[in-house]
Image (cartoon, rainbow over all chains, first blue to last red; front, side, top):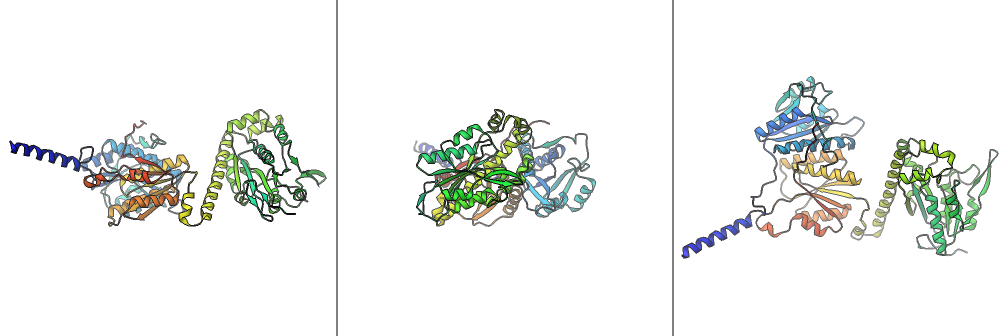
Amino acid sequence: MIGAILCILAGVLLGLAAGWWLPPHGRRPTLVHRGGARRILLPFSGESVSRRALDAALRLAVAEDATLMPAYLAAVPLTLPLDAPLPARAETVLPLMEAIEQRAARRDVPVDSRISRGRTSRDALSRLLDSEPVDRVVVPAGSGADAGFTPEDVAWLLAKAPAEVVVLRPGPADHEVVTGGAVRGHF
Amino acid sequence: MAMATETTTGRHREPGTRGSHKVFLGMAPGVGKTYAMLEEGHELQRDGVDVAIGVLETHGRVETARRAEGLEQIPRRAVTYRGVELEEMDLPGVLRRAPAVCLIDELAHTNAPGVEHAKRYADVADVLAAGIDVVSTMNVQHLESLNDLVAELAGVRVRETVPDRVLAHADEVVLVDITPGELLARLREGRVYPAERIDTALNNFFTIENLVALREVALRQVAESVGAQRIAYAGAVGTREESLPAIQAVGDRLLALVEPNPQAQRLVRRAWRSAARLSADLDVLWVRSSRDMSQEDERGLAALRQLASLLGAELHVIDSDDIEHAVVEFVAERGSTYVLLGRPRPATGLRRLRQSLPVRLMRRLDGVDLRIVADRAQRPEREW
């Protein structure tokens, strides 16, 4: 009888201790999610990003438990200092970043966005690759006029990037892009 | 005999000191600057102050002329230029009459050649130097530094400009503001220009786009003047500790409290969006603890720097182990009116006994709004 009471008391005490230690919502506290160890870079330089490239990057991130790193490559004109504020571009880039994050969130892919500046998009990408370790770079091939990378850019990237480069062939759905239009003014 | 006088602000002034200058600023003709100046004159006169009109430009507006009744007008003087007789403010006459307060309309006016000064604002400087308080008027497009901006916005370049120092040295700047719609209604009713000029005005300068842009410029200009006065006042109060309470900005200043992790990017984006809506400045602050920075922290900080510089925001890093104290000091120093921070991590163990950072900040930051930015929220996305 006494043993049973002691067992119940021990159980109650254990329960109280667990309740004290656990956070209020009943789950173990999670560390601030810094994403997976692997990082998948998705560079873009315009006002939109190829939907195929984004989807491919997200599929890879899910498969590899990786963090998506969308990076805006800001080409700063020579007339401005390299670190000059670019408010007009911020108006289009930030909503786009938000739209990308929302798509990634639907697939539970952590995102760690970047902005890189250079005198050209290629210069900005080069600076980014010098400072950030990445495991894969996903780029859509294109004419350069659309959201894709030109053959010259792709060739340069293959030679320069210290990571696997995934180049998406041009496809019929290349006109589909993600822009910040859906979230502009709502985030 | 020189006598001590009261200024328009009720300040006691000793003889020999400069008069005080109050400017009624408007976005365009017709908003009611001159009317407001005359109202001020009547009010002062009722209070027993000696008021006289140095010069009044009614532009044929009946309401304005009627409002001037009951106020003494110092006669203008005739100036002949190329055979044409013009009437200008009689500066020597004003100085001789020496009222306590002189109402002088249209600061930007160009005088006819042959009088003391080429510009009316120079006449006003003489009047002020004589210890006479002046109440005057001007439109924002006449301000020298805004001339290019206004020309770009409105497509109209004005030739009569007033140096910025005139407004900067004014003791008071009062914005006479009405909505563009109301001004257009006044114009159509013939209360601004005579009937024959209404159509031309509506087709040129008085478009809704121009007026909205000019109104914004005028509002900003006055906000800046008030901000400059606030800072000057805070500086004049004395020590930093004494001046801190004076740092109560009328405009908003946002502070995004971040850590160099991926979530910070979203927090800064949110803060930037809010700052843009409020036309406010944005500061980004990381209170760095004494622990060593990891490589990940360094990369996160570099990413925040890039983002902040794109947005034109200022990124600050303060080394402190007492985040609450560091934030409170920073807010007081910068005059922040909003603080945005991420959702705090759930506390465990003994930390549960302590209040969360937002609650502690809320208790200590009187008059400062606190906003907790939620974790990644999914929003319905429009299909293209």
